[in-house]
Amino acid sequence: MYLISGIIVFSFFTECVTLGMDAIVMNASLITKVAIPKLIFPFSRALSSLINFLISLLPLLLLMLLTGVRVSPALLLLPLMIALLFLFALGVTLVMATLNVFFRDTRFLWSVISLLWTYATPIFYPDTIWPEGLRGIFHLNPMYQLIDFLRQIVIAGIPPTPERLLACAAGAFGMLMIGLVIFRRYEEKFVFHL
Image 1 (spheres, helix red, strand yellow):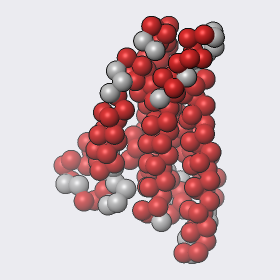
Image 2 (image 1 turned 180 degrees about the vertical axis):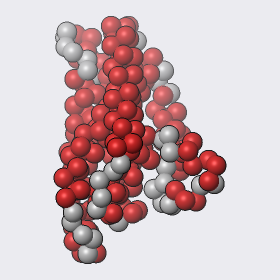
Image 3 (image 1 turned 90 degrees about the vertical axis):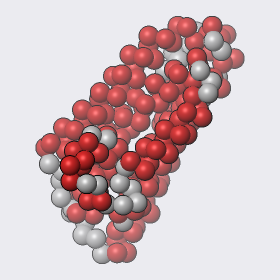
Image 4 (image 1 turned 180 degrees about the horizontal axis):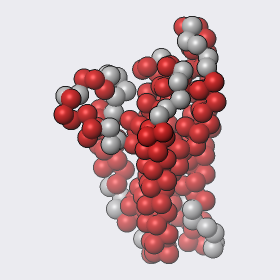
C-alpha cells in the first residue's frame, strides 16, 4: 500500500507534466492559424492524465480491501487530495509548456529533474531514512506533502493535520499561480517561436 500509493501519485504527476509540456508545440499549426485560448492545450492534457490517475486509484482501493486496511471517514478527503494534486501538476505543466516553446531541450531537462525529484520523494523508502536534521528540508517537497496526504487518509485512516492541509494547499495554489503568471506573460510570443 505504501509503495503503490507513492507510485501512482508520482506517476500521475510526471505523466501530466510530460504530456502537457508538448501541448503547445504539438499544436503549432492550429495555434498559428486560429485565435484560440492557448491554455486549453496543456489543460486538456492534464485532464486526460487525471482520468488515467482516477482509473489507477481503483486497484489501490481494491488492494485496501484485500489487505484488510480499514475504510475510515478520512477517505472522504480523497477528492480534496486529488484536486490539490491536479492543481500542483497543472502549475508545473504550464511552466514547462512555456519553457518548451522557447527551449526545445526542456523535455530532456525535465527527464533529469523528474528522476531526481523521484529519488528526493519518499516513494520507495520511508522518510525516517533521512537524517533528523535534514527532514525539514525534505518535507518542503510539495510531492512529499501530497503523497503523505494520500497515505494518511488511505493507509492510516486519519485526516491530515491542519498544517499538512495548509502545506498542500499552499504548494498547489502557489504553483498554479506561478504557472498561470508565466504562461500568460509569454503566450502572445508563442506564435513567433513555433
